[in-house]
Length: 333
Picture 1 (cartoon, rainbow, N blue to C red):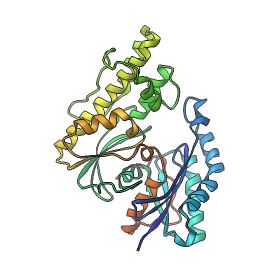
Picture 2: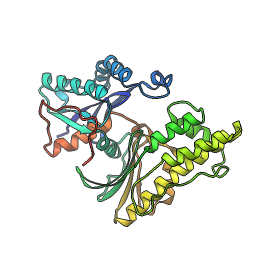
Picture 3: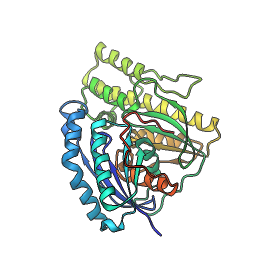
Picture 4: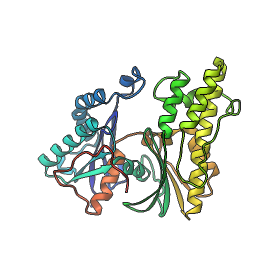
């Protein structure tokens, strides 16, 4: 018998709702983005984000149910992001999920946002996708996280390494600000880099040899020093290309080294930065192991990944009580 999970995601600045069947088949997946709202500030304003979630959450849930062509009697559980994320934003999703679950008599399932990103690789948008094989290594690259995680099975994780300072997504945002390219930084850097020569400017690679950790603060500072020394408008494209190449080189090389060193059978790439075209192509081309990649639309924050993760937690009997609270600093594992 199929299980249909309503997923709700409000960890940051995206209000999202989705319905997923059996952890694989997307019946609906809707996102109300706040990018344009926060672009004027050059970054996310937490209070603005939480207020916008209040405006968008009920309509987006209703739309997700309508698009899935289901009634509440067809839903088997409600999965919601419990953390990590912005406290005010998380509370909007959590309280909405609790209200729905309580009124409809459905199980409530709290989901770790990072674990949700991992389960984007289980989702099918069209046709079929390979079923992930364990043990695998997962590179989680998003605005606030750059983590290398071994996944031994559903719900079983071992953290190998993480960023010691800026996450890759934060580094892209800061680099875009330095170059005057706007917000969000990842897409802006990628677009500017299309017309640039990655080898034109010398930028360092922070390898942190002997460790599975990452560090991008020094790379960002090196870019700033180049800009302060003076580069022409033509060189902005070169700087964007060089910065992007440096980040991708480090992410790909360290992930492959960790995967082969720990006898993994697959590499999984997830998170918002996983939508980066150069990262996706370089990881696929260089890796001696199969590489699993969600579609770009499933890399960024969405509720389908939360519902997919919720399905596997429900299958394992991991149902939460009504006193479940948001955990802005929630860790994976």
